[in-house]
Image 1 (cartoon, rainbow, N blue to C red):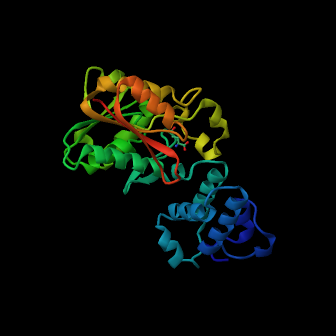
Image 2 (spheres, rainbow, N blue to C red):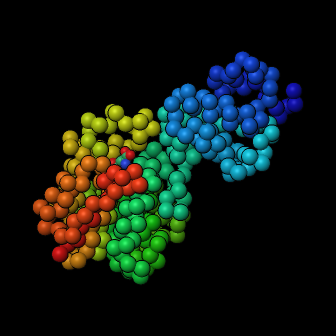
Image 3 (cartoon, helix red, strand yellow):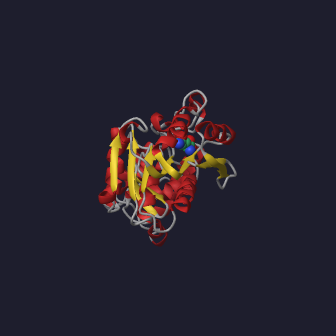
Length: 306
Ligand code: GLN
């Protein structure tokens, strides 16, 4: 056995269980991917092969294409150990993007970890709707509530080079992540990050656009979500008994935080459209509408201060 090669007997102990038939073979990239995909599949993990490849590329500090060009390369002991630890954590239910430490959103890479919700593809549609309301040359101040990693608000200011963002979160830990993302994207001069409860830190100020992806999952539903989602901050998910507790406060507070003609653009949960339209009416907002995401679920709610 070459020193840089790990035989299956020891590797199997390292990685977990392994099929008896392949005892004695070397852990090449190809074999590691096959074994891990199979293991993830048995564990009921979504996209098992993709997950295996993403984690392996991360452990080897290379991109996924490289795995295919180096299919027959054996892993050395350190690489295997690094990968094993990622496989164990994934097997125990950690979201893959926490393990990778990053998530793409609207064409940019954001740092993510257990302090923040992992950016979702459907939230990109919220960003798109907000950009539509901002117009191409906006230099207007934007307010984002429940900013988390900052992916939504930071995308808006990255896309509109004259715009400014005030981003609020109740979690100081989440704001630390947003701050790192703002810095990595070169947006610090145009971004103000404030800790506090919804509108409290911006009392008396008005904005042209208010965006939020607030917690909107009903408390009772949270235990039924996938284990990966349950590893995400409860604060970012839990919308109270009917899921609308935070949305309600945002909608009812929006008129005082928006200029006349300013837009409110929210992410909402499936089935919440009618209730949110009611809230818009209660708040005296006009032009209320609901858009669906690519899965045809109600996901985006828009309204305007008259
Ligand atoms: N869309 C998230 C989910 O998949 C919920 C995010 C939120 O509550 N804002 O559970």
